[in-house]
Amino acid sequence: DAPGRAPPGRGSRGSAEAGAPMGGPAVTRVDTMTGAEPPTESVEAVSTATGTAPVAVQQEALALHLQPLDLRHPLGLAFAGFLRDAVLRYHNVLNPRLMRVITQDYHLREYFHALQSYWLMKKGDVMHRYTGIIFEKVAERAEWWHPTLLAEAWQGCVLESSSVVDEQVSIQPVVLDAARAVRLKTSTIHCLSGVGFRFQLPFPINIIITADSLGKYNSVFAFLVQIHYTKHSLERIAIPNTLYPAASKADCPHHTVVQFVLLLRSRMLYATNNLIYYFFTRLDSIWQDLMEELDACPDVDGARALHTAKLNQIMMCCILTPQSKSVKMAVDQLLDTCLELQKTCQGFITKAISTPSQALPPEDFDYTKKQFTRIQINFDNAHFLLLSVVGKLRQSEKGTFQGFEDLWTRLNFNR
Image 1 (cartoon, rainbow, N blue to C red):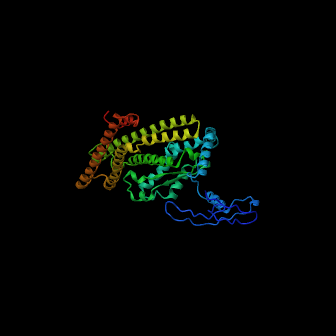
Image 2 (cartoon, rainbow, N blue to C red; image 1 turned 90 degrees about the horizontal axis):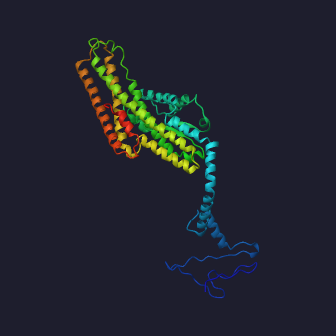
């Protein structure tokens, strides 16, 4: 017989011991695995007139209520099944409604407009002023990464622009790795690594524009800033009129070096401008497709999947994926060589400006000429490497590296 429990009398305590069959001796249960006897517990029952369960049953129910939901428990499985059925039942109804709320009430397009304006630098006037302040601080070797300086520069640049997004959320400039920016030299583009923004997104906008996607946008922004920093540095190379006063070579003792620097600078600016035109043209095309397809998305799931797919295309366009790592390394080498020219030219101008009507001493002239010749060789090698890498990818292009044909055409000086 299965062990039973003696029913308590009305208004009295049960006298039967737990585990004892009715009318028989108590039966001791032994664990068949360990051979140990379980601890005995006295079960007290309250009056059935109160309608309450025995104390042991109450304790078991309380323990189940306090513990996290265990899907191995029958009640956990039942609740999970109920929750799944409820979600699936209302998903097709609530998802389109939520998409309409996000689009109409929360102004989804305004948030995407902010991403394009600031992270993709579409709003040229604001971003030109903001990045220009950073570039000047970098040239002065000032602490450009300081949060207060960035905040003041940003507020001054966006003071004239206002939108729905500006009123509802906060966009704050930030340097994600300020300690690394302190250690890096200004003669490398990586000194601007980590520059970006914090974008505080409300619910339910953060369902579509997630924190992970914002990290990718910051990577794209930092890459675009590095290219603009290179262009800004090359444009700052200006030969004073005192060093180049006349058209006659005999009247200008620094004519040879100055002419060499100006020609090399023009080649570097040509390559840098072509990189800027290529990346921004591709970004505009991808973003236009995103906006057109976003209007046709019926629900939140489709909008989030579309945004993820287009953001992956943007990362591929800006050579920030593992598949395009070789192209990114070649571009970095090319940009670093351009910054090296700006730094060396500053040293040359400082020496030559002291004696504008006299040639440099022979040892200084030879050293300066060797420096600029080495920079030219490094630039030619970096440019050839970039052309070779892009040329191989465009030949094996099967949809993954779309657009590299245009990049190769823009960078090919000898076409």
